[in-house]
Structures are given as structure tokens and as C-alpha cells.
Amino acid sequence: MNRFIAAVTAAVVATSAAYAEGVTEQDLANDQADTSRVLTNGMGRDLQRFSPLDTLNKENVENLVPAWAFSLGGEKQRGQETQPLIYDGVMYITGSYSRVYAIDVKTGKELWQYDARLPEGILPCCDVINRGGAIHGDKFYFGTLDARIVALDLKTGDVVWRKKIADYKAGYSYTAAPLIVNGLVITGNSGGEFGIVGAVEARDAETGDLVWKRPVIEGHMGELNGEPSTMTGTLNATWPGDMWKTGGGATWLGGSYDARTDTLIFGTGNPAPWNSHLRGAGEPTEGNTGDNLYAASRLGIDPATGEIKWHFQTTPREGWDFDGVNEVVAYNDRDGNQRLATADRNGFFYVLDAADGGYVNAVPFVEQISWASGIDDTGRPIFIEDNRPGDPAAAADGKKGETVFAVPGFLGGKNWMPMAFSQRTGNFYVPSNEWGMDIWNEPITYKKGAAYLGSGFTIKPLFEDHIGSLKAIDPDTGEVKWNYKNDAPLWGGVMTTAGGLVFFGTPEGEFIALDDDTGETLWSFQTGSGIVGQPITWEQDGEQFVSVVSGWGGAVPLWGGEVAKKVNYLNQGGMVWTFRLPKQYASK
Image (cartoon, rainbow, N blue to C red):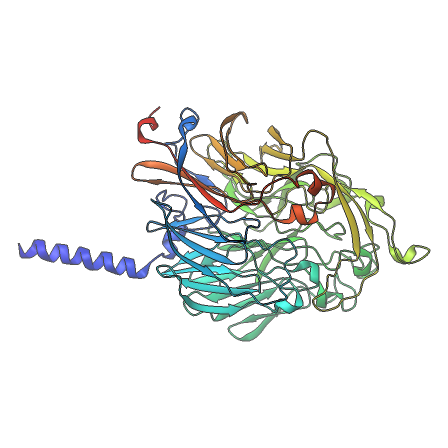
């Protein structure tokens, strides 16, 4: 009896200790494998967005039904780009205007809500969205539109700490989901249209204290443990004069973590200003390549120190707003090679070596690319020079450079919306858009807090029958296996499952499951508002559940020109939709 009591007591103590410890580094590392919860943005820090669950599959997905719905409420119905997280019976989501909701995952009942008190004068370029949070220990972490990172108590929503990332009055903001590795909360920044300087920062998850900071534009000094560390790149190697001081390169989409090589991988945005002639990129000179490192690039970063291990620049001499921020997914190819994949805004799908970021191959994934004829053996684009917007200084009035029609448009062949990798098929499922733009350059000078573009543009669709295009791409061959065409632009995330399903949503409000082999539509549900969120799935009480947040908005209605007019009838909303497969259908 005494032994029994001792054993029970030990078990209770162990359980209490585990509860007190909360979410651990090991939990985050095993996020994809543990299908009872979703702890990370991307359903795993490699961002594969793949679930090993196959209870829900091609044969029974037609039986997927709503379980509950939750309204984000109020007048703040703007773009909802979040991905839900699930832990200890609670779903955590972020909403527009820097809000957080904790929801009972069984009933859909709100447990608590946090609403950041945003100051007047915030400068988000592309809607007041938020793309999700992170969990570690007993805290929930997320960023705000006034460029802060906030830690909340998981149970109560009370603020544990709040830290400033950068000065919102200078154009900085923050919209990405933080990334947590080895007890560090790792964030980027937003504001590339305001002449800010992109950076990646790591903070102690318990205290919020800054551990290291790595600016991503050459010439800027890094920081480690409160002291200067190393300079990023080499001063003026690829930037003329003092342009690097306001060089852009915002790290606005966050990053991934490749545990195989212990590497953070962050993308960097457009160099500033957009007018490439001002940055020496239009006509490089001897001793200055005009590549404007490390903008429009992918960086491999040491998570302990913030040192740059490697870089790969997808668009050197960038002049079309082809940000390099799109997510980098860590995976193994069919031969077992450790690879990285990214579908760039510039219209090319790249495969890199995971060990050093070295170039493996690249193929176009959208049609009619006009700025480059291809990618050479080193991974560098083969420019079509007469498709670069003209230098306004060469114009008779000095006010407007030559207009060109460039493809893709500045919103990209693929923008922020995350693709997914299927371990079942070995293919990537890439949400893309087929559009181009008239673009021209204009004179511009930097002014703190003011737009710093130096370009004008009008975006236009390429085809009458579709803009959006969800493509299944074989990363080994570059072959497009199938192509799902959508009338309006696609702007939300994709998820794949071992059950052979590809989930995504459309601006028209349809939440859809496709056959991962054929692209055939197997199930759909009308949510009532455009979907720009990111779906997840998990198992609970022996059933498989799927959730997505609906709510139209984001950059398309703000920046889309003719494209925006095409979809201006779409309803805004703000709703979490959760679906379940009833147990009686699980074996069918």
C-alpha cells in the first residue's frame, strides 16, 4: 500500500512539474509528430505544414462537418491571416489590430481576449493583420503593429512582459509569428516601404531581454549580449555611398528553423528605395556590384549568436519589389538529400542545399516571367535589362523613368501565403498568382516615417479566367503536376496531410480540400468571408479536426489596382471555423 501511495505521489509530482514547465524545446521539436496539439507556426519549425494524420482522408473527407464557429466580433473586421495554435485544450489565435483570443477547443467558447493598445500614427503598409503567435513555457508570444513583442500568460492573458522591437514612428511594425528556439524568442521586423533597416532579434523567453541582434543590410553592426559583435557584410561592397543606412530588407515574414543543421533561416525584403538606379543597381560600377546585400535574400543564421552562416540572394540588383522573405521549408528529397525550398516573389521556385544554402536548382512556377530569362548555374538570374524600370534622371523632365510591363507584379508570383510540403507525395503545394504590372521609377529622398518607394505601378491580371493558381510542384524535377485555377487571387496558406488531402481557402470564401495526387476537389465549405488564413489539423477524443480563420483583407484590396476592383465585392468578416470528422466515418 505504501509503495502504491508513493508511486501515485511521484506521478502527481511529475505531472505537476511538467505542467509548471509548460511547453519545452523538446515539445516544439516534436510538434509535427504530436498530432494532439499544434504548438508552432507552420505545424513544425521546418514549416512543412504537413500532418501525419490520415483518419481524415480522400475516401471520407466528404463527411467533414462544422463543429463550432467563433466570431472575432466588434468593428475590427479586417484581414485575418493568423494560424491557430492548440495547447492544453485551448486554441490561441491572433486577430487584426494586434488582438489575441484564447478559445475552449471543445466548445468554441472564449476564455480570454487581449487587445493591444495601439498608439496613433502606426504605419502598417499592407493592412492591420497579424499572422499568429508562439508558445513556450507558460507564455504566449506575439507581435504588435507598433513594433513590439508581447508575452502573455497562457491561462489568463495577462501581460508578463512587453518589449520594443523598433520605432513605429520611423515606419517599423511587426506582423509575423515569432519563432522560438532553445529558449529564445526570435523576431524580424516590418516596414520595408519606409526606408527602415531589416533585422533579426533574439530575446530571452522568460525575461524578454535582448540576447542578440543581426541587421541584414551590409554596413550595420550586430549586437551580442549587450555588446557590438560583427558587421553585416562589408561596408559599401554592394551599396553606394550612404544608401545602406536606409537600405530596407525588412524581415517581415519571420523565419524557419532547420534542426538538422541548427540554423535559423530568414528571408529579407526589398532594398529601399524601389528605384534601383538610386542604389547603384541599375548600372553597377567597378568596385560596386549593385547587388545591395543582403536585401532580397535568404540568410542562414546561428541561433546562439546571430552570426550569418550563409546567404543566397534570389534577386540581386532588385528593382521590382521582389522581396526575398517567402518562407524556406526544410525537407528531404526523394534520394534522402537534406534540402531547403522556397518559392520566391520573383516567380522562381528554388531548391538549396541545407548544409550551406548552396544553389541546387530553380524553375519558374508562374507564367510569362519578363524580368529574367532564367537562372544560371550559380543561382543568379539572367536579367532582361530592358525590362528594368527606367532611370528618371535620364528622362527629359527628370520626373519619370521609362515604364515597363513586368511579370510577376510587385505582389509576387507568391507573396506571404505559405506553401506546404507533403511527405506522402514528395511534392510542394504552392499558392501563386498570375499577374503583372506597369512600373516606372520616380525621384525620391528619404524622410523618416514617409513612404520611400521612388516608383509608381499598376498591377494587372494576365488571364481572363483566373488570377489565383495553386500548383503541385515536384521539387526534384520542377514539373508542375497539376494546377488548380481560381478567379480571385490566392492569399492564404496551404496544409497537406498523410490522408492525401490539400487544404486551402479562397477570397470567395470557400474552404477546400483537394486530392494531393490529382488536384480534384473532394470537399468544400462556404465560410461567408474571404480566407487569407492558415489551416491546421489535430486529433481530439479520437476524432480528427480541421480549423481555419476566415476574414477577407490583406494587401490585395489595398494595393491591387485593377485586381482589387475585380474582388471588391468580397465580404470582410472574422470567424474561426472548426470542422470534425465524426467517428462513424473514420474507417470509411
